[in-house]
Image (cartoon, rainbow over all chains, first blue to last red; front, top):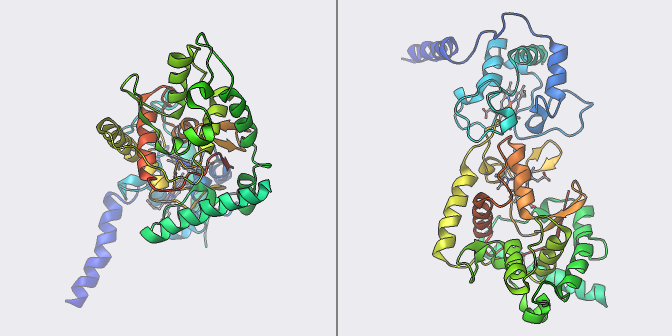
Length: 136
Length: 258
């Protein structure tokens, strides 16, 4: 019984990750972690530091609405990180994290942002490369 | 003498709202309490609060005759310190003349156009903000007391719905921040509970006095949603809901905010 449960527990995350816990590259090209860092740091591009803190010491005011991004690369694979940035709501429908690469299912989007994703596919790959480099 | 009186008023405001909060086990508080000591001091000290300059010009406008009727506010309402006590604490309300809900600025403009027969004051103009700050000051320490009115009930329900609706490219609702995450840091800003106790406010970032509507507009734009025009019913609905949500809290206008 106990062994069966263990096997099940091992199996479950595996299944989940195969189906919905991760997402393959959007561009097929590796992102650039230096550019990714700049996107994360920029309050009007990545907006990440509004909610998260990250090991970016030159940025003084960082948010605490969300988990610290330090160590992201040790906690998740690049494919898992990508899904969280693309559309965190696929893992947690109640999340407050904005969907960075989704245009459907949104309400009253301002005219200048309509039909546009918050980040481009290339920018997402850069951000993922940066997050993956954050090892603890 | 003046500062003694001020201290007495402030103490009354503070103990009044505190007593209420304790009695109800109420965790609601004004954005005032989320600010650091320097900004709280700026708001508390009428000689340092920049909003008081606007209040002074509002006070002057109060007794200035205007329009084809050649009447001032004071000609109808006499002393604001008496007639306007508690008034800002119950707006938005339904206007007698039109049977429509209006906020305080809207009410002031109805008096302009109907009773003074003068042109309406422009949205966010110094004149309109000065008058509304002067009127709001007369409610300092008064509990927010929205009127019971079916029309307002419908408006509040609509406001509550908007408050919970996710919107904009960032897909955030007002409730995501103000109900679920008050007290946390959004970059450098402490997220307040979002109560309308202090409006109009002098906001350091604006370097100006601004209405509750202007504040709401900033939050809407922050979610990258389309801002409603200033005369949209949506603001009136949100304002009505926010006042209901803050029912019983003490007014502390004109506030100072970062």
